[in-house]
Structures are given as C-alpha cells and as structure tokens.
Length: 500
Image (tube, rainbow, N blue to C red; front, side, top):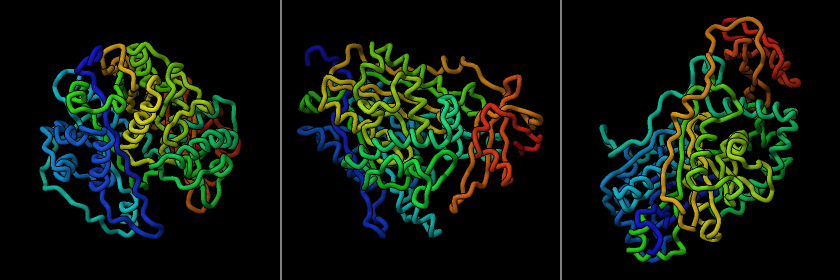
C-alpha cells in the first residue's frame, strides 16, 4: 500500500435497488427488505473480500426513513444481515443526511476509530402512499417503546418561521418556487420562458434517469412535455409543473460500504473497486428562510465549496462528474452558481442519475444513490474527480463530498464552515406588516383542477425588513400571476393579507 495512508477512507462497495411494483399492484416488500438487498449488493460489488468486510461492520448508519419512522432501523438491518456492529447511527430529517453520515464515518476512519462502516437507507413510497390513501397502515415491523440507536447524527428544529406558515408557506412545494421566481426574475425571463429553459436541461436529466439501471422513470420526456402544464403534468406551485417536483413515491434503497485503505487491502478488495473520499464540507444557511439576506443565494454552499476546493487544490473546472442536489430546478441553479458550474451545459450535466424528480426522490436518502452512481462512474474514469452535493429542508442544510478512484494528494478532512456562514448578514422578519412594500418573490398553489387557489408573496420594505402575505382572492391571484410582480408594489394589510 505504498504512498496511500492506511487510514484513508475508501468506498469499496455500492448497492442500489429500485423495486417498481407491477402496474395496479402494491408491493409487499418493506424498506427493511430493500436496504438488506442493497447492503448485500454493496458487499458483492466490492468483489472478493466484500462479504468478509460486511461481516466486520463496526458502524451501521441509516438515513432517517420518511415512510417507516422506526427509532433504530440500523439494528433491524444488522439483524437481517446477521452482523453485530458496535454502534448503530440514525440521522435526523434532511436530504443532506447521506453526506453527514459519510463525513462522520470517514472522519472516524481517518482518525483510527473504526475500519468498516455500512451506510445508507431506503424508502417504499408506493405502499406508504397507498396506506395513506386508504386510511390504513403499512403493517411494517415496529420497535419497542424506548428503543434508540447508539447515536443520532445531527440536530434539528422546526424548519419554518411562524410568519412563513401564516402566509401558506409550509412545505418544499411552496418554498422552492419562491427561490425559482427570484432566479427567473434576475435572469430576465418570463414564467413560461423559465419553464421552457428548465425543460431543455430537465429533458437531459430525463434521459439520464431512463438510462440508469435503477432509475424510476420508464420513458424519457421532451422539454415540451416537462415544461407545458396539462392534465398529466399539472401545475403544483407556480412556476413548477408536477415533473419539476421531487418524486418521493418510489421504492428505492442504496447502501455504501466504506472502509479504511488498510482494511480494504487486508480483505483483498481489488484496487479497481477503490474510490477514495478526498474530502467533505458542510454548513447550514440561516435557519429560517425569512432571515436570509438573499433568496437566490446560499452562503453555506459557497463557503463549503471554498473550503473543499481549497483543501483539495481543485475548482469546478477540474471536476468531470457532478451530481448537484435536484429536489427542484432552483436547487441545481443555486448550487451551480455558488460552486462555479454551468447549469445547462450539455457537455457536463449536473446529474449522473437524472435527479430526484425523474430518477426518483427517496426522501432523505437520494444522495446515497448519487454517491453510489458517482463512485461507479469514477471507477470507469479513474483519473477524474466526482462531486456530490446534498440539501436539507428549504435550501437550509448543505453538504459536499469529493471522490475519485485516484488517491488524494492531501489527507481526508471534513470542513465545518458554520461559523463563516453565521457571520453573514440576516434580515429582520416584520411582525404585522402593513402599508406599501416591494415584492421580492411570490408563488401560488394550484388545485387538482388546475386553478390557482392560494397566493403567497415575500416583500421587503425600505429598511430591508422582510414580510410575508397570503391571499385566496381570485382577482388578486389573477394579478399576481399576470406578468411579473417582482420589484413592484404590494399592499400588506397588517393581518397577513395582501393586495396588488
């Protein structure tokens, strides 16, 4: 193992499962079934010695499972695999969780605290959705009251400010359109022009998803199909159509087998299976969206990128394989802008899977799939660098990971740049705002018949304070969506409503 630090963290096995039920049927498989299958696939992917490494697993980390919220899923995975890790880890909610798990395990491997970790998660969204629709339950295994993993990774709190909730802004489908409209306005495009532009590069994502062996999408869609509202692609929240939203109704699992270089060598893992973790970085933007200085920027992504690129002596220009988090198109745009990538570059698409809307968005675990796919591609292109990004909540929590089949030039390190982000400016959220303000951004939620039902605005006053407003008035909704109200006046009534 000349010139490779024996404590270097190495991905040696990746396993992915995408289990689509037959049309009209509900799967009988559980998240546990899919995770166990993915774990065994990861061991097999490592080649000779992979099964032995799996049996040596010391840390088993599972991303928070949306459809099956058991407290210690790692213990159940270990039981089914017949292994006895010395710890189980579960993350809190967030799409950043796979990189948080990877960084935690990689750091402990680099420090000599462990040698083998199994990381990942799984969702069975079809059965979960069917149970919700029927008013029943999935009937999946539960754990006794008081069960806890060895560790819970991450801290969390309610993601929304009360002023945001009062304005009808409460879920990803209402937050991310606000960011998109701000980006659209800055680019000088109309709403439909923005949809059409997204459709062009989203169509390339669609083809990637169909080509991926584990992609959920069955047929590639054209730019027009993706961008044009209609019965099969209804508007969800302006400006997004259905196919621009992450699809969490999928049955997918992915697992990663991470070891020290020393353990991989001792187990006889062939060198052509090794993918080195060069570095990771993370931070959260100001927690509440309303407190952030700009709604089309991410100081946390920018700071994480500077730290990671600085540590590895690289830049966006050096990275051939990229998967930027893609729950909604604006997440890709913000990540690309902060890191130095070109969003619609046909020569270097910013996804290797097709993204959460088309490949599949298995809740918090998507990035385990993107890392697994990047690792697979890195083996095929051993001289290239691969970058994954991850996002939790509403462009709130962020993580980056840099991988390559070429050993790193500097030892692995994780960069927590939270203090740098915390020092960036914030805005005051006004209480009971009234009078004439300036529209910063907006969205409207649509019902299943295709009619706008609730409108939300975000506004700024002359002092830079931010406020939110809500309306169900059809005339106001019509004016909100007719043209572009951004940078124009809005009347806030002091009781949470607005008029244009």
